[in-house]
Image: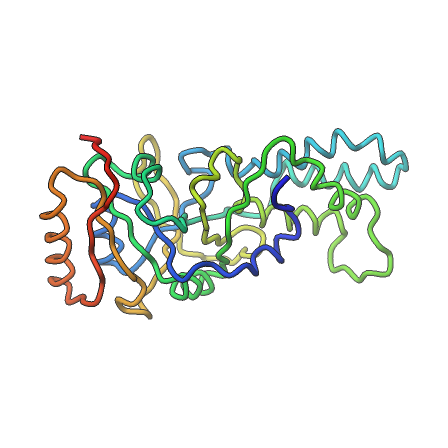
Length: 282
């Protein structure tokens, strides 16, 4: 048992490093730089669409196991309502953009970049915070859990089963707890991905039910993919701290070409280097 899952509010107070890295393709990198923006994808359209449900399903599994410990009908009704809300998730779409604290990392060159055409963009965290805030979003470190971590939810389940009568609540405790869990879910993944050291910008969901939001669409592998734009227009070029060109058969000229591209856009002051990872994918 490593990281206690709740309260997520406390977890989101953890200060991220000054630079976070986004691994992507050369084509996507050119778009990010030219448009001064990055896309936050609807969680149900990620490569693994089940990852958003990972922590919610873990809570439900623990709840079922613990239900006999709550014999009182009032307790059971509270928990059953909580379970129903977790399963139905009626709070609105959630969008995420993913980053890593790891720079020039072999695992992520392999996992997120096309062979010979990968780019790692170092984003200034302060710019990410402001871009997230403008979309009512938050930035937070991903917590990695596994099946053995179920007992870490016991205090949460106790608070749902036995809401304190002296605590003022705008919503019933079981509803508020479900809302909290849905907002927290994008910051949880299976421990199998822990080597990624991931941080995420999350927007949408229960904290953002605005009408007439601007949702855009791109073409995915087999469907249209909805996303929201996180804009850095107010930061000019200061949102990028550095760029690393991934392992490539033409690394020196790839670095030079990126520098030429930046110059063509009137952008200066960004350090462009080549990967030092010994990896051949072509």
